[in-house]
Amino acid sequence: MNFEKLYTVDDIAKFTNLSTRTIRNYLKDGILKGKKIGGQWRFSMEDINKFINEQDAIKEIRNIDNENLMDFINGVNTDFSGELQICTIVDYYSTENIASNLSNKFSNLVSNLIEEQNHGKFSYYYFNEEQKARYTFFGPPNFIIEAMKILKELWEEINSNKNIFSSKEKDFLKGRPDYPKEFIDYLYNEFSIDKNKVIADIGSGTGKLSKCFLERANKVFCVEPNKDMIKISNECLNHYKYYVPLDKSAEDTKIESNSIDFIVCGNSYDYFDRSLAIPEFKRILKPSGKVIISYYAPFNDLYSSEMEILSKYFINPTMNRNYSNQFKDGEYIEKEFYHEFYEGIEEFLSGCLSHSLAPKHTDENYELYKRGLEDIFNKYKINDKIKVKFRLKCFTGNVESLIY
Figure (cartoon, rainbow, N blue to C red):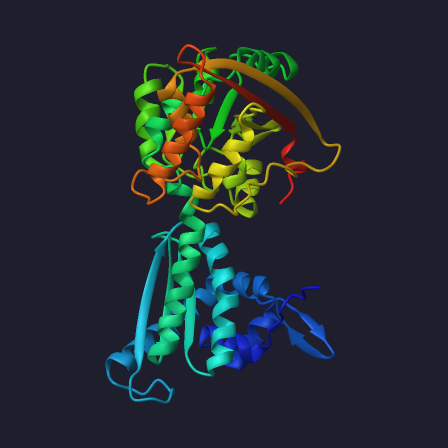
């Protein structure tokens, strides 16, 4: 069983550079909240992050931080032993909720590092005007190196999905099949979608799903953070009157609050940070709005075992995407569709190469993977075409029923 780590007033003093007296005053005024255990105040990292994002606390932390910086520049000792001392400032430009999420994870890890090494300190606060988070670190080289490593790894984790399809946009466009008309008809009939309904396609990619709604004259916000995908989407969809491209993420769409009738996620939902995306969905959806999550993928009994063997060439062969547990039990409608068609070698290769884990042309296993796909095609082709079967699973429910 994992227990949540709790912190003391002294710990908060280390995180913020504030005095324990100042922290207790904030606690007395209700700006800092925690809970008493055995007569002693204890705080979760969530409590601490809420506190350091309070405007009064931010102002005081910034003032002390600036004093420490000037002391360091002027050669005043930073209270750490060792001949070599370092001060490092890191600015991270993002919305406050994303910065806070990163800070929460980071603070937990760095606080453990401080306890292990017994030296080093850092502070964090957010500039609302400039929309950036600032981390300031003081300490000897080992502490700074380890802290930067942790921050880099968290940054890459948060941003990895943004560029996961970079350089695959053309394969995505050529190899991914269009959505079956039966599926789109089902959505319009089952959920009373008419041309007045506003759609937000979150993680819209090259716009294959968005196109289905644009063709029926719906206004569609295409939210996609990958610039390569956006470029293709613009080329394909710019001629539609109600096409609205947004170079944004699921966690921060910048769409007006309470303005969306339906959120659709086609093969994209499991890439989102649910702790941030779900609150964003709640913000932009109208009270009567629905969330439609679909997964559209190959479902080929004929050569599935051979495709499974080729997965050893994937960028991360042990990674499994989570296709389940989107909604709470019994609080969604599920529907399946099957789509069979024939395609040539170029379409078959592009479809397989567009997979998120498939090696890119710059990866060492790319040629081995591609050669294996060609062998499968040549083995099962009929008149230079191979039969392909796709399954589409669709889950629809209210945003309040989504599972974090």
